[in-house]
Length: 123
Image 1 (spheres, rainbow, N blue to C red):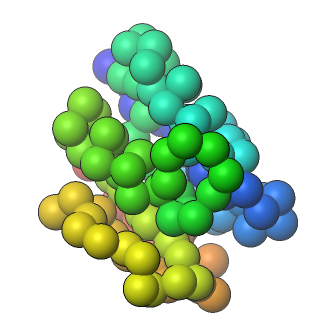
Image 2 (cartoon, rainbow, N blue to C red):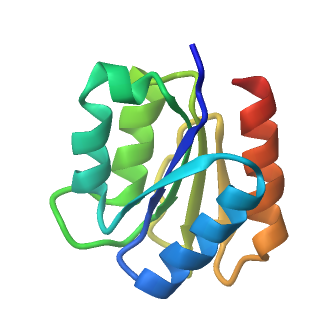
């Protein structure tokens, strides 16, 4: 199984684009989603979910799910997937999945790239 894709989930287009560039530098293909609902829709197809090795998600986004809820779904249904959660708000994180990595905004691009490289190597 070739797991060479990453989901980058953020409602702010510029931040999503920067994170996508960082993931591309690590050699992963990027699927961009403007909210957690779009990411969940993508992951609900098992053949597509099997190709994903990284999810980078913001916490606060429009839609029915936030990024923390998405991270818990990923941790439960796709345990091989690495998770990066980002936010400029640190007070609404709640309980994160054990293997999720939190990067406060503003984050450095190289931190996303390094995690994406690690995810790619371990998938």
